[in-house]
Length: 202
Image (tube, rainbow, N blue to C red; front, side, top):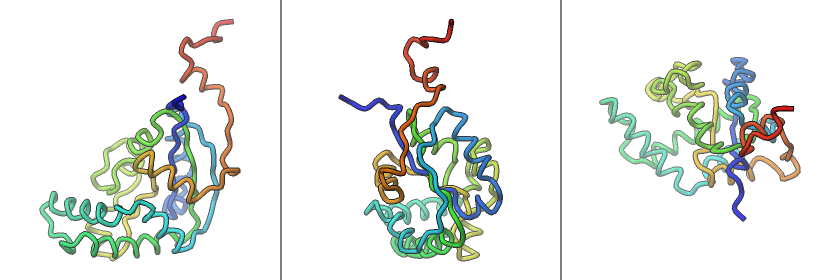
């Protein structure tokens, strides 16, 4: 039997800048009010090794990230720092390791229908400058690839959110043991998922 979409899970990390800017509650509120359910959460200070493994769980990450960065520069009429995607990603990864280990981070699993896509939509694009108004990154960050590259650091964009269901599964296994994830029922799930909205009227 196929698992109901309401069981889809995604991983979110509030990065060190999100914590330092005291946006934890605002970020959680944005996801929570859509109807997603928080099934695991912890505060950690990560090692560089754990962060590198996180970003390279997908063997294509290095190539794809480099290509996306080059395309982003070209779209804005700017010259990318290199034409080699892997060279670009090597620098990005070093900067990410410094950024993600600079202080505590909050790692969370959210569950619900279309969890991965819903979270990506609410979070906004990787680069805050081009993220839509109404998204977390669009509303709370003014950073850009250009500034971060000039300063030789990672883009400060508050949050990591899984890019696909497959990626979410790998990342969840990387950060959480099975017994750290809680299965429970929220009363509101009856309103969101029950076919006939049974039990509203007395």
